[in-house]
Image (cartoon, rainbow, N blue to C red; front, top):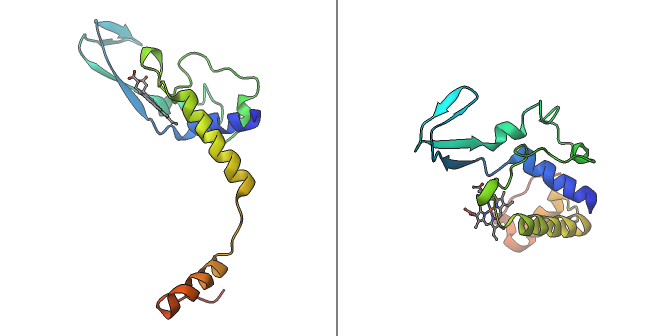
Length: 133
Ligand code: HEM
């Protein structure tokens, strides 16, 4: 289960399907030399952080072991956002992914595509042509 959790974190890091969140500047502020005026919308682009080689060495390598004894610094792992709008479903989401992967990995069966096609053809007849193996 510990390794599965690392696989999920690594998947969330690499895929980051919640690419970004909007925030509105409540006051003028300066960040990295850029002034963001009050009222402007700011896009926090998570994927850039998750693929930053200074934060995650060799970032395009799928490596669950990078999470061994590693706790990300604040603001460097944001699949569920951050701050007061942090995704409230984050633990539920990870639980659901764990349950899916658990049953998928223990119960999946490999099926030859050819055998599958033969079975379909048995049902549909010649309207479902298949190529020889
Ligand atoms: C892998 C699955 C999920 C991902 C990657 C994800 C990601 C996110 C992200 C990035 C945000 C924006 C956070 C921010 O603005 O800082 C968010 C917000 C939210 N998520 Fe999720 N989420 C997931 C699953 C879920 C689930 C399972 C639920 C509920 C059962 C949920 C409910 C919400 C709600 C209600 C918000 C709005 C929170 C707010 O604006 O205060 N999410 N989620």
